Length: 476
Image (cartoon, rainbow, N blue to C red; front, side, top):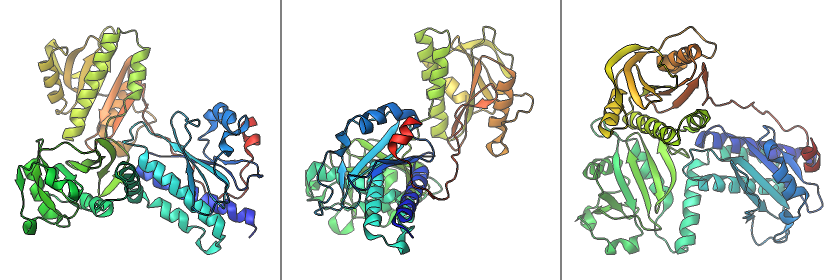
């Protein structure tokens, strides 16, 4: 195998593993790479799914019209495996980037998508740094026997990415002098999160404090050193979490056992796990790092993505106050349905004369400007059928049945709420339907089309040809 073919296969396997791993950690993700093996080689770009196509002007300015990307330490420096380059000049909207140099590859810059519902881009950046390291190692070793192992490592890197980011941040804050071990903490969090107590998921907060800082805490209750519940005993810790549910109290741990119960704010280097039922969030200090559910970590913050609704409202002839109130109302009702896991359907009707919908009518529409009526509206979402809200900020009906003729976008896997909404919106103009499934996905539907549908990117099978030079790609 020629060195060029070997390089192409290395790039393909690492990019495929990175893309697949990030797609499981976040939403479907594309990846791209710009690289030069030696200082004299031309820059090449591998962007099989056109992630960078809309960013050509900025990329041309940075890579073709400037030599800023070449600046840095000598690529022959063998004192470190890889040098990560922090550049503010290559800030591309909606993208996460990671640039690096090594003794085997003069320059490489990785790109992936920054999804709007990400808790933090930190773990993803750590993931991309590891991809850059593996590519450098593969180029250096030229070992055909391990050509696809790097891709396998990157596919399963989510826990390691979270751990690497937490360690990097804590090292910046307090140096290397720490007794907290992050892997056992993350393992315990996942173990507790999947342990039910009398059929109920865990709720409450568990905070991990550096052992040297434990004596400064004012405890509400502290356990004797010989009687402290072990963090490895997930069942015991899960039972103790019941004592801090729905309160400002927290279980305090030194990373090995539960020390006691206290009401304390996070420190800048503490690690916290907030259990919220069948999901939860990991914090470093007050910064959200990632979420967890189904015994795995994820980048999603579990907040509904209502960008399409916001854009639609901006196009309507409504006052700024009405637009803001409708958006806030929809957000509150969706969040309530999400957190209570009962799902709901909202019909936002912008016709001058409200659409007639079969359901429970009201003698007089309910004014949603009033806080008590808003609370009632959130409770009405629990009933079967849709809640009908008009642009006058009034609730005109509930338990509404949405009907219509069959449309091409129906999906039997999505259930009656979703498919009924498709049929109904295909039949009526000037309205939008929001469907919240009991398992949390939110769909925004208009004119028989799901605006929040996710594109499935084409599957890649090999990188058979050498990626084109950057100069050629930019001129296409």
